[in-house]
Image (cartoon, rainbow, N blue to C red; front, top):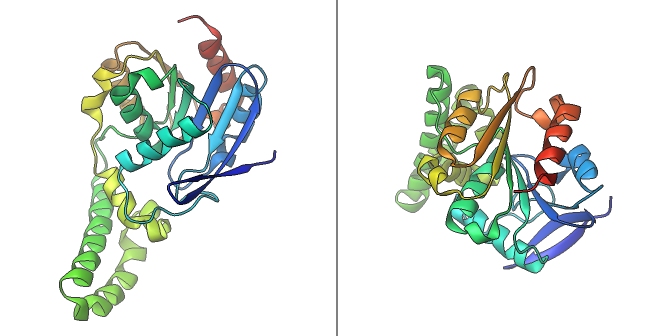
Length: 262
């Protein structure tokens, strides 16, 4: 399907739109692109106007000009909505896209229609010790290099060499693959959005895989308990990408949710 480019604050944002009717905006996860949603995008375009974009630093959209926080991505998404005529779209939010949607729906309730969260990030979980250590080491390595660059520039080459040897063995996969987005990733994963959930006014459907190891089912249960008007549906056998692992069931629940009256 053909894509288009939109210029927002000096950034080139790639997106695609198909179908007509009530708009549904799809926000992908960290390290992904709008292609992740392709089967769901096609399904939604038969009955709705489906819109998906590559978030800055992902897919074919421009890199952020500096390390960003979730709020920076939210500002970009709001400007994208304005530029594409999306006043109050429904939203499908996967993983990192869920972080943006939590902030959008809680701080700008008049801009959020129905919300479909799937494997959403934003709620801290009890992680295995090894995972927590790996994340801490990745963040520490980034902080050390940043401090060396600003305060002790002569030591930066040494820090780089140490990080180059240790990080492949210790840091998380997301951190290793983030490249120029590493500081942004640290900013993003460090933010606990639990306190925002009770302020969400939109109807919310949470579709979660019981085999998700990235954002475990406990995260979905926490979100469902705190969002006032939320329904949680568990998809057995699905992992972190329920819309691919259990495609037919996911499409069925999504269509039912977006078609039914508020």
